[in-house]
Amino acid sequence: MIGRGAVTSRLAVRAHLEQILRNPQLNALAALNGDGAIESAGLLDAELKNGRWRGPLHGVPLTVKDFYNTAGIPTKCGSRRLADNVPANDAYAVQRLIEAGAVILGKTALCPFGRTYDSYDENTGHPNNPWDIKCTTGGSSGGSAAAVAAGLSMGDLAADCGGSGRLPPHFTGVCGIKPTGGLISLAGIRDSIRPVARPQEWNFFGKWAAVSPIARTVDDLRILLRALVSATEEETGGKELKEMRLAYSSSLGDVPVSRDTSVQFERLIGSLESAGAVVDELPQSRLGIEEAQEAACSLLAGYMSYSADPFTRYVRQSLLPLLPVPGGAGRGIRQGLFKGTSISAEKKGFESLMEKRENFIASLDSLLVEYDAWLTPVFPVEAFAHMPRMKHGAWNDPFSPRIDIDGTMVSWLVAALAYNILFNFSGHPAVSLPAMSSSSGLPMGVQVIGARGGDFALLQVCEEIEQAAGGFRRTPGY
Image 1 (cartoon, rainbow, N blue to C red):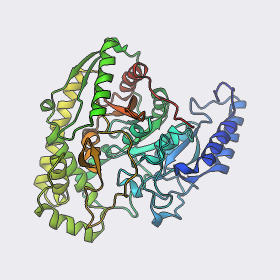
Image 2 (spheres, helix red, strand yellow; image 1 turned 180 degrees about the vertical axis):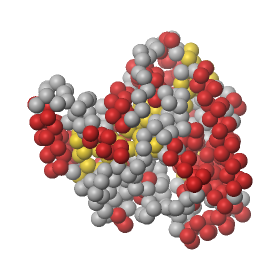
Image 3 (cartoon, rainbow, N blue to C red; image 1 turned 60 degrees about the horizontal axis):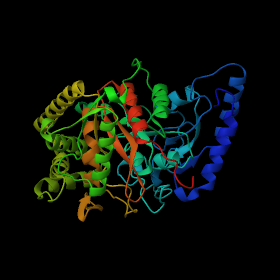
């Protein structure tokens, strides 16, 4: 609309700033760039008037997760310890969006350095879910998803290290993509108080964490992703749904989904079959899901152990391997997290995990030659009431708090890792797409996984699923 001259960027920016100020109850923003956004919009309007159009993001108001460096805008990373931090330069991904013509409205809230799934920001508190402000947005990109769902922003630059760019969209009814590992540079992300030194073999993590756009529709995701990538994957005319072969798994590993989620997921699968797609259930044994989950969680815990304070790291490395692994759902995930705290000191163990990673990648690559995409749930349940914040520390229970899945209490951490970590582990692109509603009317997403390097082909598949399932629903009251 801005490019066609139907509305100016200044008008669009002011409208979104007003929407932000009308909805302080959401706690979605950690910093506002009101004056700067209006000034940028005016300059972009002048460019357009003089015949320069930067593309589909020209003059479009966006937000940025608050651990990307933003020149002149506070970057607090959800931490009180960085409350006064104002970077001099933009992160690479932020710079790409600005060069494409985006206007940065402000920064969205997250938990300190994106380390947990609850998004509790030490400076602003919990972001609240626009569908029910008593409920979680998930994390760590909770402020990002809340802002997009409530119309505070037309899109957000989030990030994903273990589902942070997919879980919040699931809870809030919007779209999020974790692109192929390494597709977009992570330069300029602030994920710790000070730089963390790790051995060179951990450099592969640059293809684990990912820049992760969030938007209302698949087409908006495509526009954001196209602005962010430097590689040029050819976009060809996609297949229609009736020409597609899709695989699906209604659960991953031994962490169950709720009966309601199972019913809604099977209903979605049925609707895709009715639309003409070939949809096959995938035996979990084919990919070795539980072994891969355990290996992924060992690597994640090993990587994160370097950023813990020395005492916490010592306690975890010394004591956790000696303790019995708690029983219940997600035993392999728990075992992996326990083992991973000491893996940094065991070269042989690290090499074994990397071999398991390569084996899983090869198996999933093979699957995605046969199928256009693989569908799974994003999380076992819909959005639930806020819980006590997740805490790190030597003596904190790493598996608290717990969620209720049909009467079974399951660690929130374990449930989130079960359905999300595999695709950071493998590097395959994965999209969370609003495609279902719970029996109580809350949105739920489906996760759609595609071939590595085929991010835009995956979005074409998602667009077909979006049309069949209905896609984004306007959030009531916003």
